[in-house]
Image 1 (cartoon, rainbow, N blue to C red):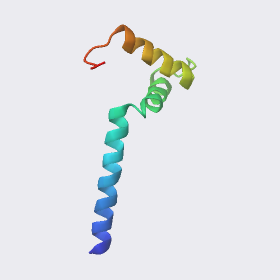
Image 2: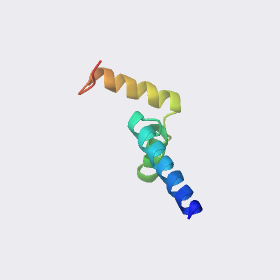
Image 3: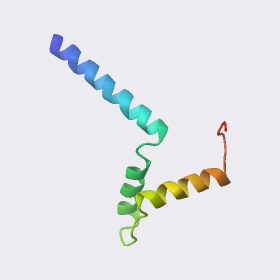
Image 4: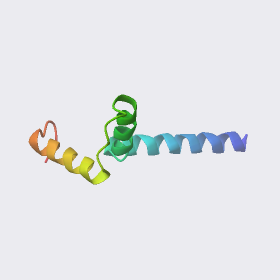
Length: 68
């Protein structure tokens, strides 16, 4: 019983971690790389630095619902 409760807490903590990192965009580059491999395997992907620069530039050009 204690082990199953511990597993449930661990599972909840992992789900919360996934949610927060997804919400904050921490896994955006990994998602981009997976998309590139799947849909554009013959095109070299952007470096991580290029990806984040482009993402910030896009957000500056199209602020959308950002607060700041």
